[in-house]
Image (cartoon, rainbow, N blue to C red; front, side, top):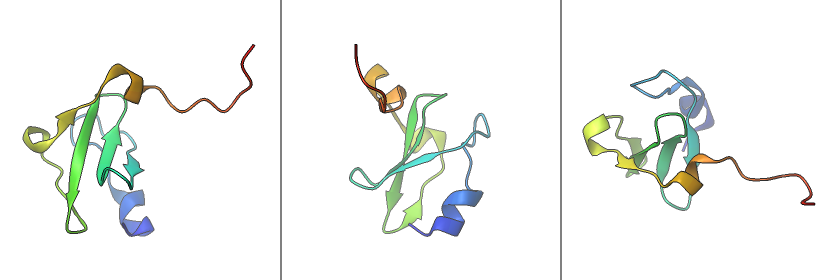
Length: 67
């Protein structure tokens, strides 16, 4: 996915930032809990086409030490 395009895209519902999941080919809005598919390099920014993400997917990856 083109970095300039990704910087311009926002969630169509909340207008928040999206995280690109290259492995799943999805743009993820953690606030709304939706993952928008990217098909053939084209983001499909329709809420009806998005999949609901799991609670675990909503949390950002941990970068700190546990304990």
